Structure formats: structure tokens, C-alpha cells
Amino acid sequence: MAEEESKKVIKLVPEYLLKKRKAYQAIKATQAKLALLEKRKVSKGKPLKFKRLEDFLKDSHKRHRDETRIQRTERRPAAPLPPAKNKLAFAVRIREIKGVSPKVMKVIQMLRLRQIFSGAFVKINKTSVAMMKIVEPYVAWGFPNLKSVRELILKRGQTRIGRKKVPLTDNTFIEEHMGKHGIICLEDLIHEIHSVGKSFRATNNFLLPFKLSVARHAARDKAGLLKDLGNPGFRGTDINSIIRQLN
Image (cartoon, rainbow, N blue to C red; front, side):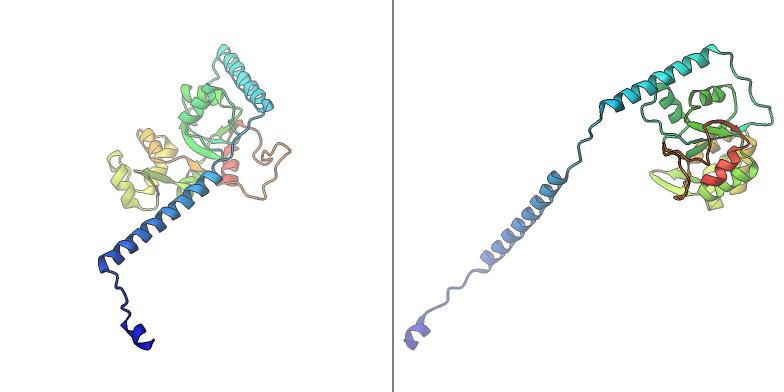
């Protein structure tokens, strides 16, 4: 018996066949992993968004109200411009714009206030005042002082280079991109914005809209609106207190 077992020869598997088996097993494992990930994506998916009839009616009512308000504003005589000393305004959106009329949405986009609690500088003229009237129920605006302009730019000033947002902290960077307008440092940029100089438009476009923040403990009313911010619309110099709260 022992002699018979010793005579048995173990069949050897060629090396190329072992490599082929190993590669096949690796491919099968990768396919199984991808199939599992795809199954998880399909099972998870995006939840269906159901919209109640009340929401449609609410949006329709808001749209109709905006259109009626804009028509009435157009019939009235144009509002007088602020005193010549007030050349600069700061607008901040403090209300949701869901369901508003297309005209209001277009002005919101032109003012670059797509997100709630975002703010931007605006040059005061006849056109900008008319635009503020259109978005009055959703935007608070007024005349910022030098302190507010400085704090906003120093704390939240950003620009976009390609797809990347870059904070404005380096004077060399500012000179590189704004030197052709005579702006070589952060102080020049602040002065150009506050004084509404010749290069205000280019400087304002160089700045991204300011993303302001709200404290978590901020008091809200039953509708979820912030009590401390007050009502939207023209706020004059009180816009500085809103900037202090949100900056």
C-alpha cells in the first residue's frame, strides 16, 4: 500500500493557467463590487418630491401679488433719488424667494443675491433705485458707512479665479488682478468701493457676493423670520446694524 501511494504522481498546474485563474478571479471580484455599489445607488436614489396643492396656490398667489405690486409701482411717479452724498448702497436678501414672479427673480439675479443672507454693493442711480423697488419685499438695503464696508471686505471679501474662490488677503494678488485700475492693495479696494470711484463696476464685479451668517440662537417669530433684522425695504443708515448682526 505504501509503495502504491508513493507511486502516485501529483499533477502540476501550468504557471500560465494559474495566472489566468488569478486574473479571472480579480475581474469577477471587481464586477461584484461595482454591481453592489450600483445596487446601493438604485435602492437609495433621490426621494420623490411631492408638492401639495396648497403650495401651488401659495406660489401662484405670491406671483400674482408681485406682478400687481410691480404694475402699481410703474404707474406711480418715480421716487426721488437719495441725496448726492449717498452714492453707495448695500443690499442683503433676508426673505425666501420661492414662487416669486420671473421679473423679481431676474432682478435678484442681477443684484447677485441668489442665496438668502447674501449681500452686495450697489451704485445708487435711477435704475438701481427702480430695481430695489421691484425686490423690496425680499431685500433690505441702505447706505453703509466706511466702517461697515471695511469690515465686510476684510472679513468676507473673496474673488473667483477660474472655479476657485480666493480670499482677499494678499496685496500682491490684488495688484496682479486689479493693478490696471490703479488698485494695488486692500485699502485701495475699500476706498474705491466706498467712494464709488471710476472703477467701481470692475471692482464690485471682482468681489464675490458676501455670504453673511446668522447666529443659531437668533430669535425668530412664528413664520421663522428673524425678529432682530426687522422688515425688508429701504433702511437708510440702519443697514449698518444689520451688517453688524450678520457679519
